[in-house]
Amino acid sequence: MSTLPFASAVYAARLERASALAAEAGLDAIIVGPGADLQYLVGVEGDTIERLTALLIGPGFAPTVVVPRMELAKVRSTAVGELGLAVADWIDGENPYDLVAAAVGSVGRVGVSDALPALHVVPIGARLGVTLELATPVLREGRMIKDAAELSELQRAGDAIDRVHRRVPEWLRAGRTEREVAADIAEAIVAEGHRTVEFVIVGSGPNGADPHHEVSDRVIEHGDIVVVDIGGAVPSGYNSDSTRTYAVGEPDSTAAERIAVLVRAQQAAVDAVRPGATASDVDAAAREVLTAAGLGEAFLHRTGHGIGVSVHEEPYIAPGNDLVLREGMAFSIEPGIYFAGSWGARIEDIVVVTADGCDRLNVAPHELTRV
Ligand code: ZN
Ligand code: ZN
Ligand code: ZN
Image 1: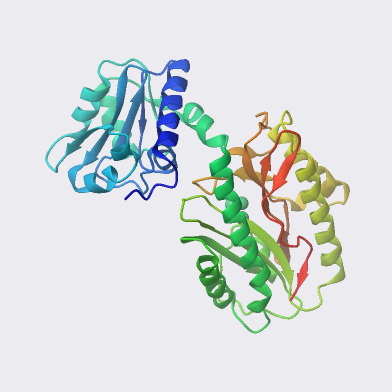
Image 2: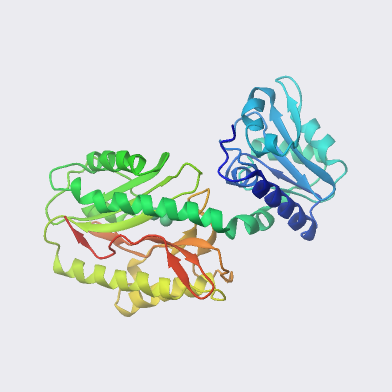
């Protein structure tokens, strides 16, 4: 029985599109290693290992999968088997790069997926006698624009993480450590419908001022502002990612005022999302509200990132990114403010570009939530 989230015709269409885009870009072949691209194209999940697994796509040959024989059964249980793609398997002692060369034939320009490791890129380049280039511009096209089935999976993930945020007041209180609170949250992420926990950030007090803080053994105190940024993958592999900021007891009044500005900044960016706007327009909308309130310097990162079968992907909602937004793109809007040594706050929703604006996939209350 297939465990694929979508019908095999969906994967066939994705492969065909990738091949057409490769041809348009002048590439004779694309080599896709394990990672989000391989998951998107044929439903094969898993990380890179030292043994080469790769999907080869190109305008001049049929899609082929090079795979270690010990992985063959797993790979066959995906769209690779359902679509009857050509498979070239190998065992230890054989040279998988010869199989790549045999499958692609004589090639000029060859692209590789972002996640193909140097461990394989260097020998493949040498074996094919070409300078490999990144296939990112070709591969991102398919993944950036979500179809209706993908959007419903992202909504499922958004609903599940909203349910977890609504339950955070059950666990977040003074006297507990960040790690204890995070353990309860992680359990709820799975209980509410995710198959995996991808990350749990509980940044209390000064730890909230570090956007990359995860959890620590710090004991949460009365008056702390706490950043809770959480996400997981639902069974289809699509991800959730949502941040809310909480106050344990009565917050400092300046902090409460600044967080109210942050909520407005986040809303301004959501309001700026529509087809034809650029990624940098959306980033600027959040930044302007914060700058006008004297908080521009406290906003230390980009406004958002795309999301799908990976948590961070294109489009990146960042200053200087002139990428024009199109219907079906899904990304986070997550401005934050950070005061080193003191506290931080971030508000994050996933939005989807619609014909005339956007839909918000996360609707748990945005304001500073007192617990
Ligand atoms: Zn997040
Ligand atoms: Zn995020
Ligand atoms: Zn992040």
